[in-house]
Image (cartoon, rainbow, N blue to C red; front, side, top):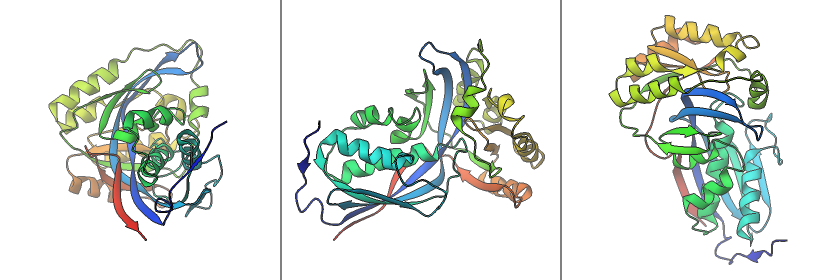
Length: 309
């Protein structure tokens, strides 16, 4: 049983922090096989992009309260933001609370890591608001219990992920790229997709290695040619829009296209941001969500505003 220590009156006096939480795309994702612990071994290259949710966190005496502008989102323990806040509250042993508001822009259950990014931003923001001053490594130890890609969002940029995706190696993020992200407005459970991986599935991370080599050239066309995701074939039978979105991006001029994560979102690489905006206009449909975005090398969590009252 954890003994809670009360925060000082100053610490709980209406301190407020607004953050941007970035999405990610998987430039490469290869499921290599199932492990003895029931998880899947993967190799992936994750890249932060400037499609962002916004979180506002404000100190409160003890309770964690959460609301979102998307009424479809759960506001209890089924939401990673709430789980992250309560996990940190329990781990730090402080009688600290927070009011958290989420403005959602990243599609839900889309392969873009929106929920994981929001959870990471919650850990990062409350660490600051509550005056804990925990190092990133300590936050990452909590983050991994929330999801395999949550630790990535504590740093952002570009990283190679191995194991279950939790072993991260930062990659040089020099050489930014313009992307077009397309989502079919269909939610897809990561667990459901991984349950479709056949027993005995075995693969080598050949495509991931090729992608890492292509990144070293800083050449958009070479990177686009090396995009890979071996889950696409498992998703397309139930979400055929994945194939249609890839074809639409390529027909509109994208240098290459791939599904991100476990889908169903697809992205394409453009020659420039102006080119990305042209592609977005060409593929935009009322039943798809389309965004022209840039990759970024900085943190996946950015401070928008701080207030103390």
